[in-house]
Length: 281
Image (cartoon, rainbow, N blue to C red; front, top):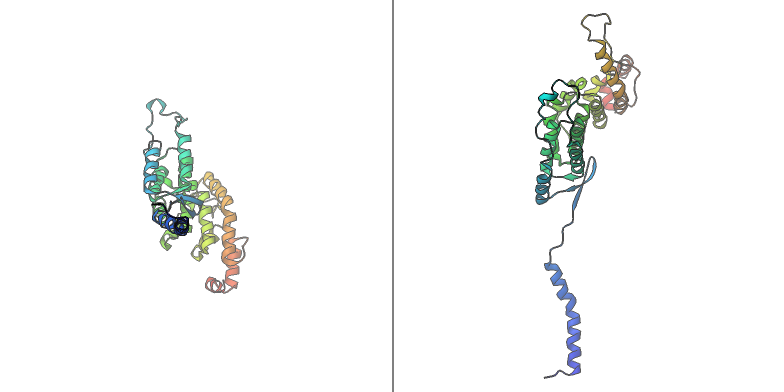
């Protein structure tokens, strides 16, 4: 039975009226596609990986990363030049990639690289990439590595670890330990620590700042127990490198700098002592 034109028109109008509602219902049932997630870190914007992504990534990169120190070849034993590192560029490429990605599992991978890679520049790069990782994992790794005797004096590796603690926070005990080991940190790590003192306005570090305000040298030049000249030359080069950061830290605390420790002590005494100055600041 054929419908009359009037009835057809009514049905068409009804369909036109209901179609947006029907389409809306279908759209509501469809799950919205999730795009990539980005977060801001101390070294910039990085992409957060999902479980499947990180699993595939680890499967891809693990064969290239060094998990054990290289064995010495008997044929090259005693020679000054080390064996060629054919995987260096590939490992650098991987670490550069990890600087742009974030996942809790990546912090552990970077920790192994920092401890075990045979090339210091790769280890330094991995330490920097740790700044891109989640707070909990990055901080835990940094605290462990700062206790490692094998990293003592490796300023380029230690500096990013100190910056992690500056950004995410650390206990008073941690900062005390860093103050006590200041001379063993290496220039770049010393600079990172002094920048932290400035950022945190760490009054507990005042004595350290004043003790290292003057150029390093023996108290008694002719004393037999003095370290050799090479020691003082190394100390002087480090002092020359970190002094600008030390002066900035003094400026942050006192609102001024001092030409020497003696003049700093005199000024502090004239102001009524350190406690009084802190109250004013």
